[in-house]
Image (cartoon, rainbow, N blue to C red; front, top):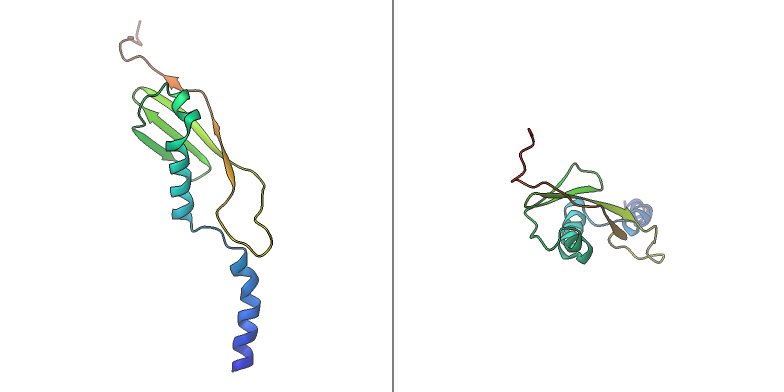
Length: 108
């Protein structure tokens, strides 16, 4: 029994070493990056963020007043040193804000 347990542990060790953050913590890390991003703030002309939505992929829609902004999570391709685990390394790709003026009548 003991040799089987040791063998199982040795087989599972590489799987543990390649682990990333659990999805809820990775998502939290991405949301904080978006909220704290100066590039996002600049794109929204300093408007406060009202909501951030995602479809489950690496794309977020940031809403601020009458503006919407697409922010993509782009992996850097950097890997942790051998034997180390940690969060996914990424950059933000910030699009241009699409702002609508509520005072403009769309029917005219």
